[in-house]
Image (cartoon, rainbow, N blue to C red; front, side, top):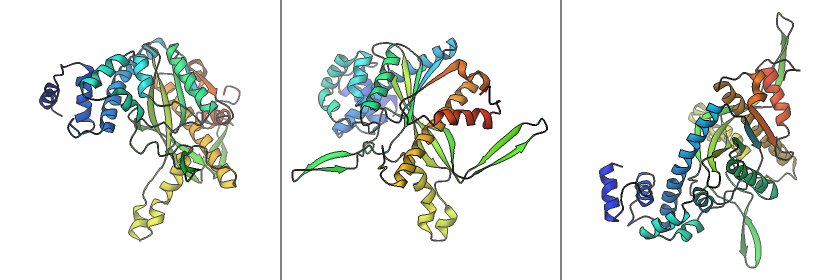
Length: 354
């Protein structure tokens, strides 16, 4: 959108530059591709959410820069659930601009409470475990403790409930169907996670044993970031969730030979790992899928921590000086073994050092 067009749109509403109203109108046109006369209530919600997120990200950038300069130790919270709840009202309160936003939306002909009411509940958690994790992240940010929450970006929540003919029915929780304005996709931040296969060993000239994992299949974990702002402080921490994708999502050769199912088979099998929160584990396949989920997000998270550590000038042997990990319940417990594997097999540290 050109600035001239934005100025015209704002002028029609009598909005001055640099105000919250002006920023909402900018996001309505530049992100939503809408103008007020045709914008739906959801369009207005998204425009306001992006406006709020822009302010949060400014805090996040300054937080990361300050923490890197201070060489701060980072607390990482690994959890299979983060029951963070709707974000708009919470983030307005954290920024201290709820009254300002209410007045701005009123000036634009919208009711803030109605916009808050249409927000989807993120399907990232189910109960006490997930709520505890979310509260920890809120508290760490408010206490201005450097922290990253690591988990899974579930495509579907555990379930939605409807009442039909007086009976409860469980239906798919499609919480992402209208988009999620609070997250930022990071396709360049991705890691390979191995499953199955076998290992091969060899001894080098110094007599050191090396182990190489030859996997049966490999899945890619892609990062999605959500800023977590503390309550009326400048510190903004990060919730980084992993989405599973196939290394090669489309087999062009199979498609050309008419085998359309095989052309996308790897994509479907890989994405199943982060498809749904708590798959039914009454059957063996469900138990296997849950274990895959736990290993998947633990491995992605540890690889990410090691990458950031190296980027900041650290070495694997000094990893403990900058990072502390909290494992929320048993789900990420496999991270202990995976960290040893990454340090010993991938980074060639001795067992005792690791």
